[in-house]
Length: 251
Length: 252
Image 1 (cartoon, chains in turn cyan, orange):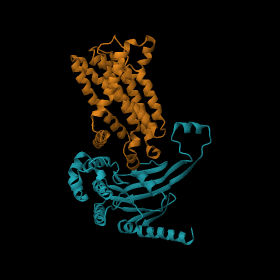
Image 2 (cartoon, rainbow over the protein chains, first blue to last red):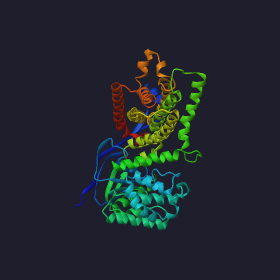
Image 3 (tube, rainbow over the protein chains, first blue to last red):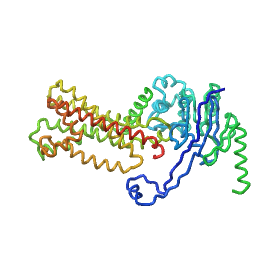
Image 4 (cartoon, each protein chain N blue to C red):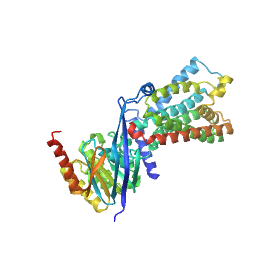
């Protein structure tokens, strides 16, 4: 049996939404003497699940169901209010491609900067630079400033760096494939390779065909709670049926 | 740990490169700012108001301004650095102190350039180097740790309370006049002296001048006490910062 890579138990994450955001001392001082008005809601409400090594898990749910908050909790960006998150091994977050990219720097400088942000060392990036350039097909432009790249070229470069991570766990938010169709095929190829290598991948997406094709397992979220998990096909069908039912009942 | 060091280096060098990006004079600006300030104050305080009782007044003033400028720049930029790197904080998990340390290192690069200029002035003034010079390293270390500690403290609260930036600007204005930067230490009335030298920066700047310009010693016990105070400030600030940093991603 594969060992468990991610184990989360009874995790809750609450957000306080003040009716007027207090980001200044004055407002906070005034509010000391006033009844505070705010709402709290649980973006992630008592979620538990386990993900085993080598599993490719899709997280499904409508907008605002807590998918992104859950990913940020797994990535360690947010801290849970209660519950436990156990993760074995490093995580490479794909929450946004090209975090920290700067248009005024050359493509090459951005590769090093982004690599550093993702936790690679200089030597590792030196070693992989050739692969990165080859994969991104941007050798010709690498010494130009990033602001002169098209947005497609920028994500291609970012994707090419991000897949170099040694981390055993990948968190992917809507970015399994980027660029034009030809480049997207290359991206899918990478994830097939990752799967073969036994990496654990958690994907959030609204592209259910891709999910059915890649994921083994699905987790369905609604209002911050897990309302279904199991085989990906079953979970996707359940979700689609749920949406359809609502449409029928004239929501 | 080695990964963190590479990240710190990348962040700080990138910021230094970008700061003077698209400007014709480029890195020279990091020298011009304190030098113009120095020239202005030198004109006022050597031609209009005179401090006759002070030897090498131009070096006295320049060293004070350079060290003070570092403190202002490091704490102001350090405090706001998390805001400017908000895209990193909201998308990737890594220790937040890295951003702040990188920001302080960027300021340190300017300080080093400025000290090179100071050395040129010292050579022109014909001051002979002495063994006392080595003690300057102690005071530099005090300055760096002090700026770091204050940056951590301010940075811990800045994302939640943006007013801190404006409060800090006012406090720095007061600090500029409450620290012997332009006026001679000898002209401070005795009853004020003890209060003024409670400020670690007053000690750091005065001691630096003594070992670099005047080739006189310093009090080891006072220096030790100052160092202890600075380390206490730093440790407390780091503890507060680390506790608060868990919430930074939500406060942005």
